[in-house]
Length: 218
Ligand code: C5P
Image (spheres, helix red, strand yellow):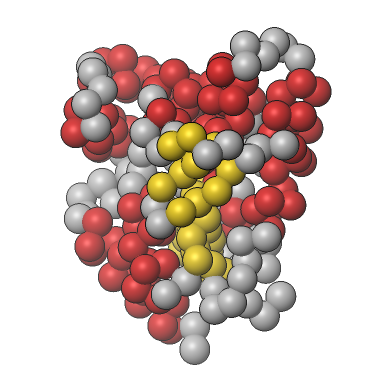
């Protein structure tokens, strides 16, 4: 497609969400937080008491997500779930169900639909490798596990959740391990991706770098 896509992939709590969102704002592009779709599926499974070992039941939930994105707010069947999907419990379940091929398949069409004029910034794990392999710009955004644990801690506390650094570190490591080693759409840098290690960078510096790479394309 000729509609430009900037694919930003990286591990959990690397700051890619903030960077992707702000880059989209600056360029006036649409924004896809693909992780939110896995989180919504997980929340839906929890809410409905779905059997977590029944892959097809979970895929059905994914296929029938009634989700809308309204000015930074996320609604599921008209309920505001922007905060609820950020809970660690939901994130951990999201990373488990994200390993299911039927779930990934069920969410593919929804993601492709975000590619609309004038352009899209998509963040996730497989944006540049699987969903938008022909993206004009691919970025692999990382940070050390310690830096990410600190950021996640601050995020959770700011949002009124309780948190503890030691638990966050081991959760992050477990999630990295699952995301990197799963058989389907593992977290790996896309071919031709620009690497951006943000461990010692501010969000603004990372945003500037991505915008600079994008400007250099033309
Ligand atoms: O990015 P976020 O932490 O919100 O994603 C939640 C989980 O969803 C991740 O741990 C990952 O397992 C999964 N995910 C994925 N593919 C994506 C985005 C997220 O597998 N494109």
